[in-house]
Length: 267
Ligand code: ADP
Image (cartoon, rainbow, N blue to C red; front, side, top):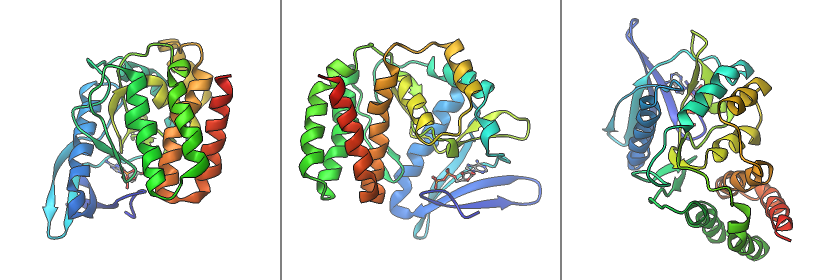
């Protein structure tokens, strides 16, 4: 089937039943175990549909994850009112703290999820700080690091709305949502953890593709707190830093621009 951003994909069919199989190197099995757990976590909420994971393992030098095959219709229609309502309902599933029971991956990058009761600290250490350190190791020192440090120190002033730990999809761009043949919204390829629901919403805005009906339905189900407009930059910065680390220099200007914009809020 070509596959997505990270893995190869195969459709297995005996004419009656179909399975969707993701493949990668055997040493990446842990990524598939985490993905399987993430799909289960979303499915348990009975809100947004997600494929049922069936099994995983290694065969020779390959790791595999087998899940239910769903005939998917991508495109703008997927992320409409129903998806907005169901996402809000999914976000109503709360945990005792931020993080998750295990680490997972965002794209091909490790995403740490150590449990933490303090969201500001979680975002500082396990999201922005973690990606900034990776960036330093990837040769992006200097200005990015200096400005980044300042931003980390200023986080308490930027995150002051006391969010609750909601179950998040974690990688909710329009390429990870589609409709099933009955028209129901389906999500896949998650990077779940419990965090501020605004982080999921911010990501929907990063690459577009979600309709105004989606946002209206979400806000009707669960209105957003004041200040989301600035925090969404803070939340999307995580994904842009991840892109910088995965895909290189092309994202440096965007990352620095976002940091500058956030630091300007602190004055
Ligand atoms: P990657 O982890 O490599 O990004 P994805 O999980 O995003 O891969 O899957 C790649 C593509 O395969 C998706 O964009 C989607 O179109 C399709 N897909 C994903 N899961 C299923 C499924 N369970 N059934 C059918 N198609 C799927």
